[in-house]
Length: 493
Image 1 (tube, rainbow, N blue to C red):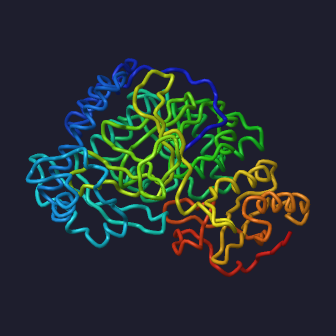
Image 2: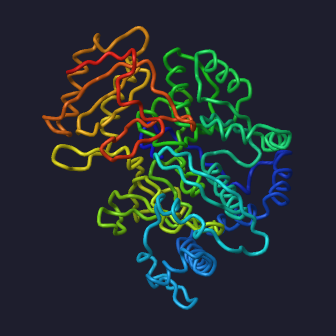
Image 3: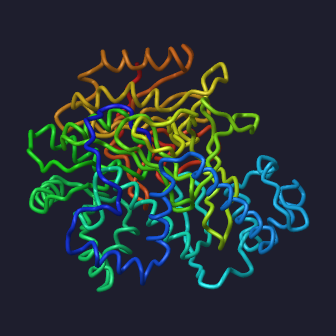
């Protein structure tokens, strides 16, 4: 997700298929050929179109037309929906009516799941079940196929090459989801694949000091070319490195995923590892959708495999203006997700990146919709604003964790986990300063209270939202209880 600060000079890497010679490269290509036969052709396609906006557009339109026809032909849900809106009539696809297709929501997926599944797939496509992590408060179950997964691998491989890591070079995945780590490391097959792919895993969903020291030692010993990290875990590790003046191996880049990446986090991580911080965007439902290249000019959209729209409050697509993201993964035919409202906000731009790659840009990612708040005038307020205001206390070493909650009555509760040697009582002037800043935006009559808590627990995916809007009627899995925790101390400005 979006990182616009803490940028260091990015060393250009050659395309993934022109990686330096190493003994793993031919083995990995062979593994792709036999296990994931669509990966190498997809990488060839990306390399052939990345410098041509016309070619990118042509591939996207062709794949969109094929997906719409398949959805109309093989799913009960889209047979009705696409006929009704005129996007497909009598077997003929009308791309000019694409924006008339009703949006897909998590609620519709849950209610219409069976009718969204394809009755049959072309020869060679195999289906598998998956589900979202539920961090939006609405986990959903869906079906995907092997071609979609191969294209996701190819897209991620290309994104990693933009971040400076080529096929076969060392990568370390420092991740917070127990499910992903379990699936990626357990069993002889997983261990053999990780050996061939030159990949190691570290968990960051539980980080006492001993674990942080161990991860740092493993990084210094193995010297990975790239770190692929969960936002919250690597941010906590970077703060520890900076606070203790620890020298750690310098990778080509630190690629972040899992949640919105705020600029203060990128700055902290870049300072710790002396490396560019790269934001990658995707999810279980849509796969690898976008990634930064290191210039800091935006996320390159994987337009060959996704259609990404930003929608205004009137549900109209907009450019150069923030909106809710609606995403169509083009290569998942097992359960087509067309104009899927994923629950994120962002801004598309018509400009192109100075790196020379012609994929369209997602200019900014402003986080989950549930991270948005409403002030006393009824205006939308990006929850990131309050996070930025609080970040300076975290960076000064006062806070270990914090979480902003807009309560049902509109008031603001800020849960904080102070450092062991301090308390918010010791920083009452800063509390008042922050309260004043928040009330300038949220309204002078908006009650603000700071509440010291023992911890802010993560959910099963290893993350916690920095902002929770209880007025929305939906709560993420990791939202803290309505009542103050047992050891809480409440401070009112």
